[in-house]
Image (cartoon, rainbow, N blue to C red; front, side, top):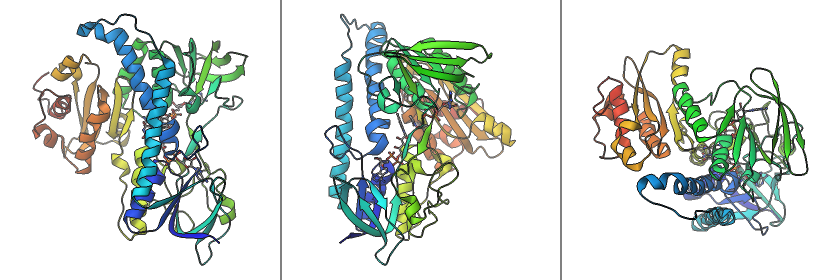
Length: 476
Ligand code: FAD
Ligand code: NAI
């Protein structure tokens, strides 16, 4: 006898668990199914983000930054550290603890919101009946359930390089990259995207010699060109070897190392031998075991679940959100879609604004942006004004001892509406929120320039960059 719910959410990543909670808040009876297992085989809700993504990467970024500061930056502050050493086992253990706190937090939230959680793989078994869509759940739950409304939030997996499958010992996806037991002497990274730069930074700070091989001739093509250029300069100065325009020809595993044969940007043949190789060349949507064919769920040509603007699939009552559908693969985008879908199911007008989704790369300095880049505005023929302000001229940044980078505003030349904000520098991940709020409210650069910002704070650089649009900075 199958258990019936109003709504079944498949996947408890940031998209799925948030959708389940919002649906429960709106009065639906909700089940959420997730198959992620912790070390002991128990449930580990939170998906890629919590288990092998956002959370553990940020834990290691923080720990490795402390290590680097203790070794290099403290001296300038008058703090001498004698006998500094790395306890990598403890660093990894702490990261695992942070992950577990988040897993447990989600189980608590399910209880609090009366969401029924099932641990196992959920699969469609056939077309909808009067009871809704029938689903089976594998062990350990071993259940049959059904619902008229289904939210698919099954996420994504790391894309492998053809001929170089992940073994998570020598050739690492994000999963292995977060769990290297010993700092590799030579670390190779294929792909200078978000994961490559974040994980490359972690292991460089801990002592690895890191070589990044990127296929495209441009560095961080989606980032504003001025900011990307600055980032390339800074990361190279820190010691990351960033090689653009590389064509990977062959990856060969040895007993304890990996050999990568590639052509560099000039077309010259190169061979590099690494102790470990991280492959971070993007992610693919995950519909494994979902039974899409059994129910006639349409996928697009790239394997994503096909959805319209409102996250509706081709099946009535079946929705899909997050990494498994089009759009940026970001946790907060998945969450926004989850809330919007739950509200649409309840007859409300849930909304996701793709123009104001912030992006953050958690390197040091951090890179964060929202809206359009200068190169996009140029390509679109939009008349714009640009204003920048360097952290070098910000009192709080000087006190922190971190004056790298800048804030950059782009505003419509005629209306002064903010079209994009780009930040490279300390706490960019936090500073970008002000720009997101401003753009949501269709603010002008003048609006930000007229708002009182606390002194001394990094946010004053945001105000000054808005003033720079009109060439009237006060501190530069
Ligand atoms: P997921 O988080 O992938 O969750 C899907 C869940 O569904 C998984 O638990 C999966 O096991 C489960 N599942 C799949 N199929 C089934 C099934 N049939 N039955 C039951 N369960 C199933 N994004 C950010 O915004 N900020 C960051 O800082 C950030 N850092 C990242 C760092 C790394 C190293 C990586 C890899 C990603 C990072 N991301 C970050 C991206 C972010 O993790 C994803 O965008 C986000 O996890 C997508 O959420 P989701 O809910 O769509 O899917
Ligand atoms: P990515 O799309 O950010 O970068 C992949 C890079 O690999 C690109 O620069 C691409 O040109 C390059 N590439 C592709 N094929 C290649 C090849 N054969 N040889 C050499 N280079 C090649 O993907 P990444 O880093 O794997 O991350 C996946 C996604 O996860 C990100 O796009 C992002 O959505 C999410 N993420 C978000 C984070 C954040 O918000 N801070 C952190 C980490 C991941």
